[in-house]
Image (tube, rainbow, N blue to C red; front, side, top):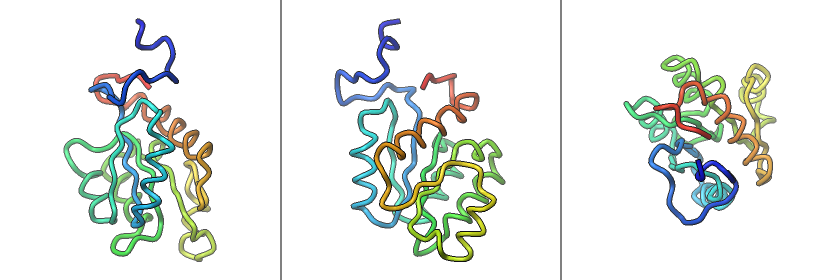
Length: 151
């Protein structure tokens, strides 16, 4: 299969139809744009949510994202609540969720992070760490991907 010969090489800006979906959640569009620039070379479909409510609508929809990278402090619904609602609906999100935060010193966030087993990215998020966190979550998602999509 020629498509799988070099997973780091992209020949165009298109994403295959069965590409896994990564939902990036942050209330700062410039942060999301930076994430997108970092991840655009990956073979994934990227979606944004600028609020917790938007993120929950996507996570709880009938076509939920394969992976979520979520900020903790959002103006409406916290990243903690998004994570808890996601795993209550689909327990495999434990392997498919990454946290990005600049608020690790906030007591409620610190106590959540102490129990969280997935990747934690501290802002400003390093591009290499973001890419490796998304790849780790995609590996965790592999058994749950629709149609056995390859990552």
